[in-house]
Image 1: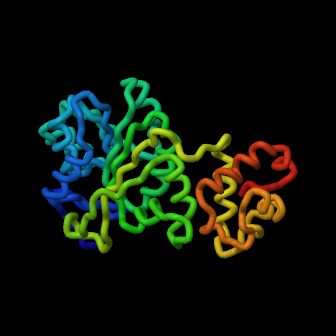
Image 2: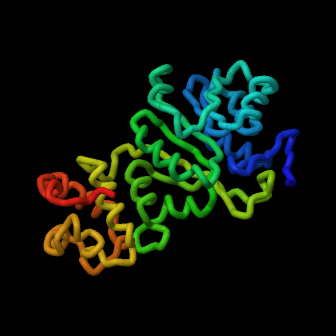
Image 3: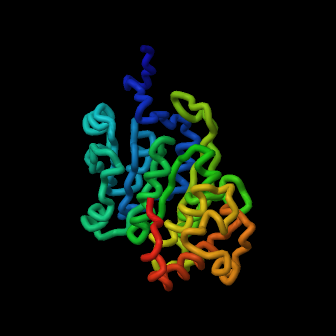
Length: 278
């Protein structure tokens, strides 16, 4: 088996390791994040420390979460800023971010370069902590970015688009070419900023019900909406709520999905008569 080695580290494909090595891009990312001295900053997947070391120049300490044992040892032994680092050798999907918030009683700023295989489940997990997160900056594959920012009537528009845009204003701020990484991936990437709304444009009484509605809508996205949501709404109810029953899931706006969820929440006794959970 041919293993790639970079800076003495065996690159582990199972962890989706592609290290950002372009100094110009690194400096642009630091400038966009704009870390401040006393902020509570968390990096997911510090890797070889390209972003970590630069961020440490501006702050008193930072928390890093790394799953790769070799990289954890490397950070502890050789990082020039190891005294500033609080290192969690852990799968980020097992982290309770509320505990990190409690320790410092400060809103969290989270950033990192996320491998494709964990990016979406991790982002969805972080949305559940949105009340304690100030902002997030992630390097992501272009395909995921397209889904995050997609609007109705677009093939990329789906559950991820709706949930992400419900919680955050999502701003693609930097394009990143494959040659900015080692090893070089086969896809383009970009930096995306997740910013909290000053005032949320949409609101639901029960987010679980919103999630239920969009899961049902997009499970068979080529069906017309009165069929895909037939276990939750009658055609007449959808029409009364301003939904074109001949449209498909990708044609329904976020505000319309929120309206559907709030109606269902207000008529929760109807849910008890239906089997709708997978």
